[in-house]
Amino acid sequence: MPTAILVDDMPQALQVLRADLEENCPEIKILGTADSVVNAAKLLRQEQPDLLFLDIMLGDGTGFDLLEIFPQLNAKVIFVTAYEEHAIKAFRFAAIDYLLKPINPEDLQKAVERAKQQLSSSSSESINILKETIKYPDALPKRISLHTQEKIAVVEIDSIIRCESDGNNTLFILKSGEKIFVTKTLKQFDQLFSEHSFLRTHQSHLINIQHIHEYVRKDGGYLKMKNGDIIPVAVRKKSLVMELLDNIE
Image (cartoon, rainbow, N blue to C red):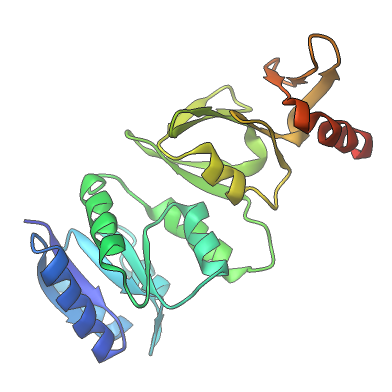
């Protein structure tokens, strides 16, 4: 039976989360709750939970402060937060599960299920990405955490040459030649990279314009990337591609 500890500085929030877990995820055994960084640290020295439901803003610090006290924490962290918009973007780049208050039961069940599947994988680098992105809200994230079935890969966004759709999955091709297969749709990454130098040239292709080598007009027109990959350009995207290339310095 997977175990959990709940950390939130609002007594009512702790009570609601416990009730939600007992009702929607009865397989989770709750080892205890804490309302501060200090009390959570004391509890974590006594218990080793599989899951840690952690609020970001606590009365005596932050959830990140708690994680720094336990750098080798094996628990899978699920953040519970009232933050919106910018924080959501931060969580998505870090590929870390989060629950927005008030918690939706279906979201809770999905987060717990994902966490149970990933109990053996470390997320420390993903949490570092989350911290960076939340700390500097006006700066574009420089790294992204990509979860595969085998590992969590932390990747420099500038090193991504392109992304290719494979059904509901996405294949990342990196500058190093490495390929990473992620079980998320291309549409999700298109939205995530909307403020970066990425362009959806085709239904199945999202490219980093920094890695374009040339645009070839023959055969209907296509892009050749610096690594030699050939990328089709949809008819409706041609004018946008041409305009973009004309403005590249």
